Image (cartoon, rainbow, N blue to C red):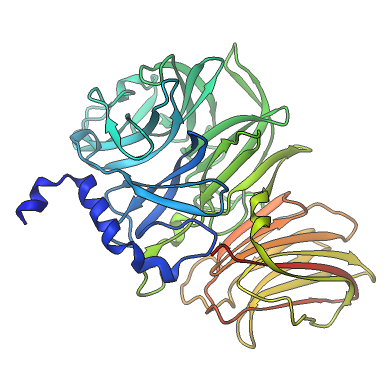
Length: 496
């Protein structure tokens, strides 16, 4: 007991990881990153450091529930196989007593790694109310493994918020470098209760001054836009955010915790972002708080938490870790949309393949060599007769399945997991519009144990969700209400 008293929270977390990390190994997804043990939520610090890709994440090692927030840590060379590193941050000081919340990372000019994060603590807010949960921005600098928090934390304080912004919702710093200076984006809630994205600049990444407001929603698209990200891609500027308290807008936005892509032009001199196109990032039940990096070969890669705050109370029993990240995705802007595709490195882990071309399907059809729960499968559908509905079923046996249904007349795709074996009263169906391609449609489904990421029409839309059937339920079938021709390409993935 005496030894424990001398150890700080970071030491205790690292020792706990070492002792318990193997408990979760048999449960893990094969090629999606999961926490070393315990709880995971938002991706943080997705960045390059000394030629390797690092990912930090919101983390509580001691339970499969949200707790005082730490930063977990892993790195990779190819976005598929990850090496776990020791816990990077734990709440140790008064200014972060509520937790080390979400943030980002960058390599400084002197070769050190800078972590920026939101520290939460109790204090008096801008209206003079005591005992409020204040948020401010903190920094730690290290060598890729061990990090030292700055003595002058917080480095962006609540007093640095422009007039009209509250001190309770001021978080999620996203740092990047532009024109020889550092820029950081921050989510904040103004007086009208909605959301806005603030910008700050720095010469050294440590001393910051306020620039202005990049964009704000005026209660049009949810409330505070958590985890903002901003980058130039294919000649357009892209702003990503995760709004709280979204309201339904047809099939584009669903209520609750949502995601938002805004594509437009940006006048740097006048700090003016002009919106041109706006849509959801992902239409699934389990996708939130994405973060991006630019690779050394110029690709923009995004990763997100493969869960949603609405669903976190519903867990399978006797588990040692909770939740995962999405497969990293390569992004492009085409025709006013954000396109997403799985990183090309996944192709390197194909160990067996099956191909079926120009197969006529109407009644339910399956193939002996197309099945599994660790697969990368592409299905292309072409009209033969005047069909109205095509359905793909995965993780299927006589009792259970998860459906992907294309309704040609409505122009929609629905993902329905209500027959997936789930025992919880949560959202089971998500429907979204897809482009009319004359009855042709293309699905790519990445299935890893208990998750599916669906990419429609080369990533024009994506839909991510957790599925609940036992792993030996691995059938796949295809059917339509009239004759269609399908091409199927199915690859088994193995990273071990």
